[in-house]
View 1 (cartoon, rainbow, N blue to C red):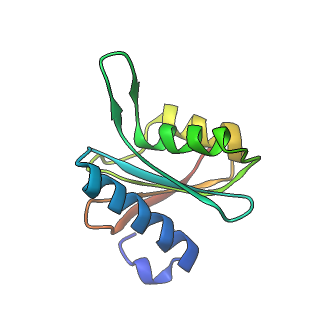
View 2: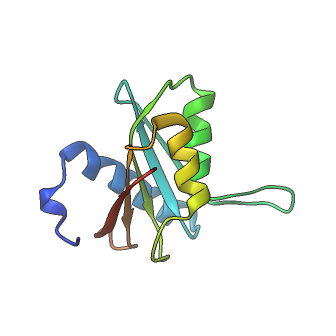
Length: 117
């Protein structure tokens, strides 16, 4: 999947936000999630000596900390070929097994769409 024109505008928005977070912070990954009310939460990779979190897990944690009850969608911008099972589990914990997870390259082109389940 490389044709972003087929995506919902709200999904394009979270891809753009994830891409911006990655570029702005100079981190390996950027991610964004959209909650059940349409609010978005954006994060980059956290790489401290005492704390290692992927961008997607950080974005999910930010949503939970802000009171989100569920997720509608998630996006991660990365050079990796796929999203890890641990990242998908974090999305699933809050959004459920059918929550879409979009994986895009640094150029913003979506390479795959999977579910959290």
